[in-house]
Amino acid sequence: MLAMQMSDSILINGSFNGAISALDRGFTYGDGVFRTLKVVHGLPEHWPAHYQKLVKDCSAIGIVCPSADEFINDFEQLFSIEELVAVAKIIITRGEGARGYNPPAITNPTRVMIKSNLPNYPQRQFDEGVMLHLCETRIGHQPKLAGVKHLNRLENVLARMEWHDPEITDGLMLDIANNVIECTAANVFARYGDLLITPQLDQCGVAGVTRNQIMARAHSLDLKTAVETIDLKQLLSADEMIICNSLFGVWQVRQLEQKKWVKQDLAINLRKTLHS
Amino acid sequence: MLAMQMSDSILINGSFNGAISALDRGFTYGDGVFRTLKVVHGLPEHWPAHYQKLVKDCSAIGIVCPSADEFINDFEQLFSIEELVAVAKIIITRGEGARGYNPPAITNPTRVMIKSNLPNYPQRQFDEGVMLHLCETRIGHQPKLAGVKHLNRLENVLARMEWHDPEITDGLMLDIANNVIECTAANVFARYGDLLITPQLDQCGVAGVTRNQIMARAHSLDLKTAVETIDLKQLLSADEMIICNSLFGVWQVRQLEQKKWVKQDLAINLRKTLHS
Image 1 (cartoon, rainbow over the protein chains, first blue to last red):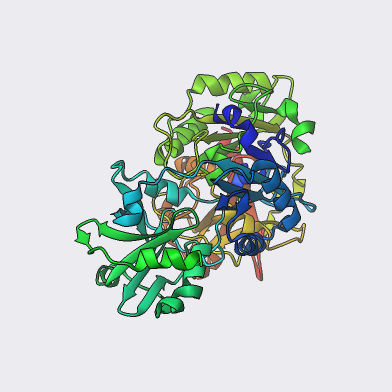
Image 2 (cartoon, one colour):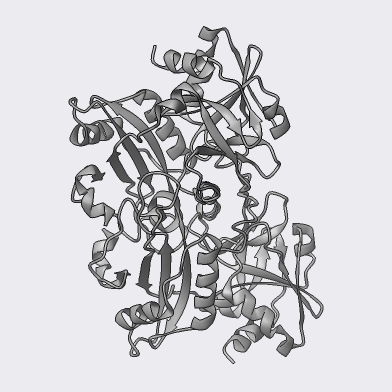
């Protein structure tokens, strides 16, 4: 039903009349990758970084990523300079295949771009911070897919189904070794003095574009950065905790279950840094 | 392209004119389950067991499985009593959803049935057995999804991409703890004297219908059965190794990398048992 309502918001291989085959390996096996990004006045934010990540993620599972030109055409068809802000979701799959895990000898990746509204985030999440649930669902280890934003996202779905309280913005996920990894839809950082630590993602998790940008720009706030394995106890002892993604940018975490952090300025300062 | 050629072989929610939305959560997150089974003269083999497993797998991820009647109608539309044998693949997803992992408050599962030909298995695989590759790709642990035949199958895809030798029938997959789990598209058993062991699947893997049936019927061949954690060394010391699924039934493994087993009768006897 939604597809009908939104048919002018979905491009499949560059066409508004496209369709997803039931034989598409994205549908049958989650055999693909995706990205979500903000489009401001028709221009995708941080596009070079997003495209680079798309190419890298496709490569991790052996898909040849479509050319940047094809995506630029999609953006031009879907978005307009008159629109203040919108969201683009890009999905690349290995394309159609016969039954069986073996990819066809020649594959034609499926390229999807979906336009949607930016969520109506409450202003207080930017001003005051957010509250997180601690997910019971653990993220399994798979080094071959660690860091990749692939379409096998059942763990995120199960984790997101754990809470219904609208006051809770996201859920923190640990891995099966009980280390802190990420939120269901955001990366995380913990600040200890002038050191900003983000979890190691070599066993699982998604290494997001905004996480990379924070690591590249934190020095401008006189912060050192490190990628480390941290457990929940270490996280709870942080001076400050923040979460980030490409849509909302950066939010402070004010509460994680029983733990509360006082309001501080890191999230606000990082948001400015990301747009400077 | 395949979809066009095969449009008379795909039912989506009972319709030949159905389509998969790019917003279907099966496509965006692999948020669903599937089954593959043999249809003989229009009748799905071991249907009660397959339907029971569909319901169980749907339930594991919080999807209400469509009624058996709906599937029976699909079988009647797609298959005919005149056809000796064919393959049905059933996919159930959580249905369409807006962007974000949170399932909609009201979901309408998507029900897909795809008809295809039974693979043209060489007769010698039944008579002489098969050769396996030992996969480098390990299966990650996720107890919440262990046993479930869900649509997050990138590990199987990566494992299947590891070999190109047509003499190799399937690949044996270990988990990240180096225990034997399954093949990319089959369950495994190892026989030690009169004891038939199949790997424990409480951390990962797919608990297939044929695996269950073998466990239920092995006593008729004077075999005891056990579900145990076994590593590769233990597997290689087995008197006999077999693999099974719903399409080919049971095959003996004659070779796994350097290890060879002499031809024996377990696979042949189990195949008979499954059809008695």
